[in-house]
Length: 255
Image (tube, rainbow, N blue to C red; front, side, top):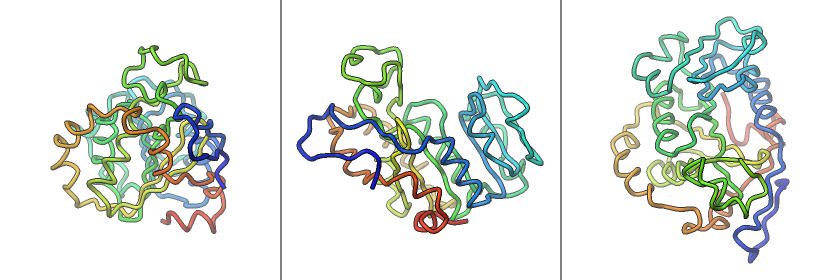
């Protein structure tokens, strides 16, 4: 069972905090069990997740602040201090890595249209059974899901003052609407969850062709209008500890 449970009929602002394994630990387990040959990360920050990789890796972040430990024992670690949009405009990750991307972690700017573009660009360089991990898509109150980080109007209802998921939760809805072929699994990773996506199709143009329509349709959507509990229920959150066990992990993803 997930470490946060949800009781029907509770107030919308009473969704429990997520208390599953932290995303750094989950990424470490994915690297250890799946043994990806290549890895790409958007949103490096201080390198806590990039440090978990042991294979040739790409890290993208205009404001990263890392040390030698982040590179660790990787045979190659390519760092790009730029936006992900600029990176994909200038570089081909397959050419840089010499192979397709096996595992990717997307934790860049917390606005859904940016995460959607990141997903589109990364999927093009993946295999069908590659794994894309999305961070911060499980807000537990409307404050965390606010569009603008400096907006403090809902601060009084949150248990995580200063926390910010942005509106990347909408990306999950978009993937479900336009790409029902994807396999999407959500987990109760501490505070803001993680979402694993596989059964990818690098040749699909569905998202890119419908990008403008999706952005126009979902931009006005607010989590309070959609329904926090409705969204959480639809995610069908799973216990993140399952991702640390090879047998259970194989139910969701494989390389």
